[in-house]
Length: 195
Image (cartoon, rainbow, N blue to C red; front, side):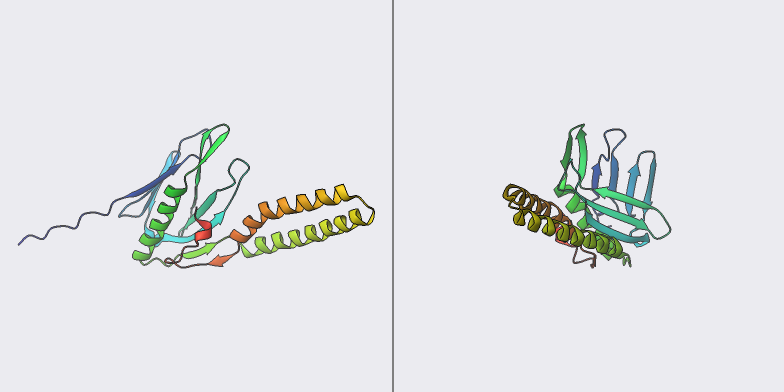
């Protein structure tokens, strides 16, 4: 009696252009591990060799809805995977579905391989504390300016300060909320850090 081999798992791939100049960064999840090709370099990292993954929300001026995954190998080396790709000099296109599917599948394959990788999300704790301290100082300064404008009767200035504060809170608030430092597990990838 001849045993039939199980069909190999289908490979999941993802690619993006980090800049207008240069080739695309290509990644593929194979049976052997995470296969990557960046410029003239390439390699395959076994799933159990991946030592850490950090997910974060990283908006830029050309794309306000951009996510990033930093993957580190236990023996050294780090690669970054972004959820956007440069199309033209003025257009950075989101690749939300492809990025999300790739990252979720990477976590599933690492869990299946018995990985003990450190899974973190958001900014580092010290960086996050510095951001919060800066925002607290800025809030105190803006409040002082608002009170001063109201006391001297500069209602147009006060209205400008309120409008600016609301816009700033809307823009920066999402960044701060999404990038709160946290640890997570393979089966609970933070949805706020996936498109």
